Length: 235
Image (cartoon, rainbow, N blue to C red; front, top):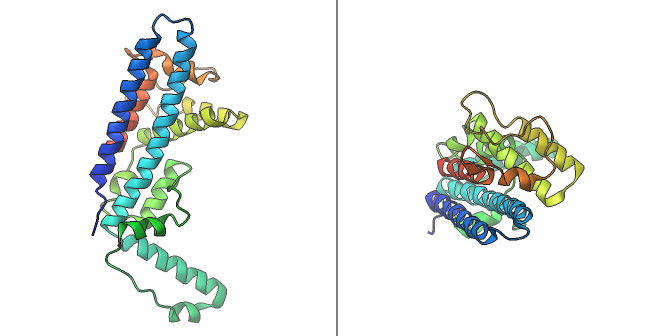
């Protein structure tokens, strides 16, 4: 029976980030001294952040699939509870107690994908808190522990990158306001690893310029990618 290895999922995302950073460096070198270097670097920074976060969303979906594939028990506990609750709400306690659920110890990966995502979509989460809640529901311990126990600084980083990605994709006033709110609160305190990733007093409108800016000896986009990669590796 084919198994999805969580470490393979992590390695694939790490490779993606490495390749995307190498691409960024090559394009940056090619843009040196060109007429529209500054504007093009802003665009490059935006597209790099956006594509990397999309890959991170795919990584999360694949990682959860891999963990559930390792141990299918918690998912079945969750499903059985929800089925009985649904039957009881519609037909009463007697019907719920009379309904049996047959668990399975093993399931093929392809079948599991259909179960987790019946419409062939990736698993998606509006924020880290929702991700943690879903993992508690369907992922067995200890596989879920690293995700459920994500630190406050790591959670803020993920939610902020998500908000930046949404602003780049939609450019709506709501997306801009959410992004700026996240950018203002990404640093949780002294010694927070998200230092240099926050905005200042004023709202950010040109997110590309913000990401390409050099801070602490590196472009800010590289600091974001490094943080996202390290968080993924620890999941």
